Structure formats: structure tokens, C-alpha cells
Length: 154
Length: 285
Image (cartoon, rainbow over all chains, first blue to last red; front, side, top):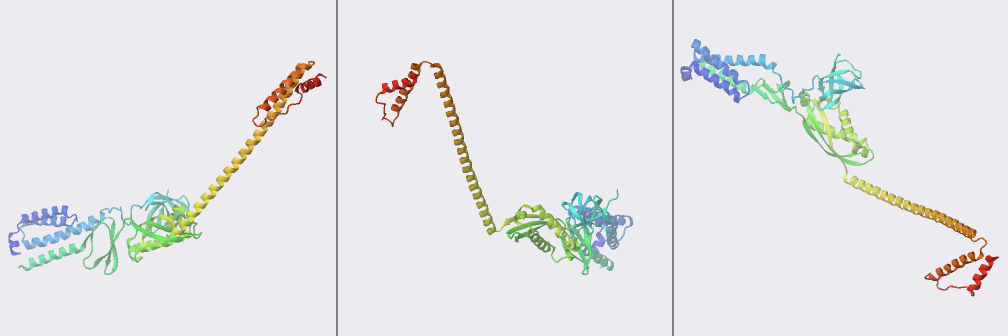
């Protein structure tokens, strides 16, 4: 460790940063990149201010956690999650029309596009509302064999 | 070693441990259910996720793609007491991973059994012929009947395809015998119908022939009458002419008699000339 403290120069950090950033290509986790950027930042700080190795190590940990936190806090949330093959599939907002009142708050509806492989499903209104035959609706979510729908105002 | 440096190294090590145990990459088409200290916490969606190491635990990794379920063969008794063997294939999808995990012990087994029993009840209300020819109706009714059963399991049964509906071996044998008897009955009917038609046609033919024969005889008689009338007209006042004609016909008739193969014994009048003369004398009066 003492040896490292004496020999590590500013450019070592820069090289480590580039290697870590490049490793992102091999490990597509989007984690190593932030360690790499933190290492490059530490190298620049060392070049500018001539800091000691221990301080640089602290800085590296701090900056890595900071970058990771920023990424998870602000950017990760806004990443769109593709819905293909997921529980909440691509059926949200698919329009349809009520074709039959089954009674008991249930209706039979036909959708413009297949919902879970079928155009005709038994539907229930999502809230307290009720429908009449011919009313336009759209999918809210799927609840077992029942598709919960909401009305579409003309 | 410098104490500060040691602390930094320990922190670095802790960070790595945190990252290794806390970072979870969920593949597309799966959703992972996380429990914190034994209680449901959240569902991890595809991509990079962070969980709290040592406190959070991945309880289940559920596939959210369509699941193919084989509904094994079973014997079903129809409304008309026929035994048929049927099996199906179901395509299901987890639409709520939390309910699929906590709502039922084993959702695949539950759905398989539910489909089997529902299928049995639907076919049990149908006659054999209906069951054999109404697969689409069976599918639709099956989906309608399980609406409330699967609601709390977070599972959607997308479709159920009836693979086979086959009568049981004994039933198949009986059906084959029935079909053979039916074919035999039709064959006998067809044959009888043919015979009947043939007899009718033959009788019609005979009737027609008799009619024609009668017509021919009438025509012949008319022709003879006409001939005699014409002869009578032409020989009016000439007895010899008529005698010649009669004699000619008489001889011709005798010749025909002698030509016959089986009638060689011909009785001529004792005095042929006198007989002819007698005939002529009659005409001459």
C-alpha cells in the first residue's frame, strides 16, 4: 500500500478510468462506467492540485457513489422499459367497443387490436361507471380473465 | 500502514461487496419479486436494479412471457353417456406477478387442474356429436367459465386449444359397428330400390309392347279390311277374279304349312279341285 501511495501518479488514474469505461463494453451493466468517470475525475484533480493517494482513494469512492446515485436518482427512472413479454404488456389504451351487457356490471367488448391474443373479452369498468352497448372504451389493465376498461369520451 | 489508507481500502471493499450483492440485472421477459425481511417489497422490472444487500431477497423469478401448459388426457362422459378421451393445450400469461406468487400455491398446477375439470363439465353437458364438432364453442365456454376462478391468481388464460377429442376404444368399436350397419342398410335399400325400378321398367316395357302389338293388329286388320275393300271394289261383278285371289291365298297358306319344321302332316281336302270350284261357286252366287 505504501508503495502504491508513493508510485501512483495522476495519469495512472486517467488510464484506470479509461480502462474501466472501456470495460463497460464487455460488461453492459452501466455501473463500471461511473467508476471509470470517477477515476478520470480523480486523475484530473490530482493533476491540478497534487493530492495524496489516500485522498484520491476517498475521492474515487465518493465520486463513484455520487455518480451512481445521480444515475439511479435522475436518469434510471426515465428509461423506458419495453413492455414486450412483460406482465403489463402492450395492451394499455387499446380502444374497443361494448357489444353486449352481461349484467352484474360486466360487459362483452370487442377491441380494435387483440388483447392477450383475443379481440373479445369480458370487461368491467375500472371505476363506478357503467356502459351501454356501443359505448367506446379503452383498456386500463388486465385482471385475470377480465379486462378492466375506462370510457372514452367522444 | 497508514490508518486513513486502510479505512479507504476497507470502504472500497465494502463498496464492491455492496455492488456485487445489491445489483441485479433482470432480463426482458422476466419479473423478480423482492421481499424485505420476509415481506413483499417490490417487483423488479427488466434492466438494472439495486436491492439492499442482506436485507432484500429475491423470492421468485417469474417468466412473464406466454407459458405453454399441457392439459393431459382425460376420460370424459358426454350427456348421452359416451366416453371420450380429450386433451388440450393452454397458453397462459402472468399478468400480475405478485398475485401469481402469493395468490396460489402452484399456479401451473392450479390452472391445469382448473382447465381439466372445467373441460369435463362443459363436455358433460354436450352430446357426443356436439362435442366432436364444436371445439370453438368449447373453447369460448371454457374461457367464460373460469373468469372468476383465476381472478385472484394474477394469471390470464389466453387460449385453450382442444388437441384431441377421440372416443374411447370400446366407443370407437361401437361407432364403427354402427357405421358399418348403417352402410349395409343403405346398400340393401339401394339394391331393393334398383330391383323395384327394374321390375317397373320391365312391366312398362311389356305394357308398351302390348299396346304397340294391339295397335299393330288394329292397323293390320284395317289394312286387310282396306285391301279386301279395294279387292271387292275391283272385282265387283267378276267372280273369277275373286276365285283366283282366294285360290292363290289358299295355296300360299298350304305352302307355308308345308314349310313349317314341325308340322309335316297336312290334311288337304279330298278333292282339292272340287273344293276350290265349290268356293268359286259360292262366290259366283
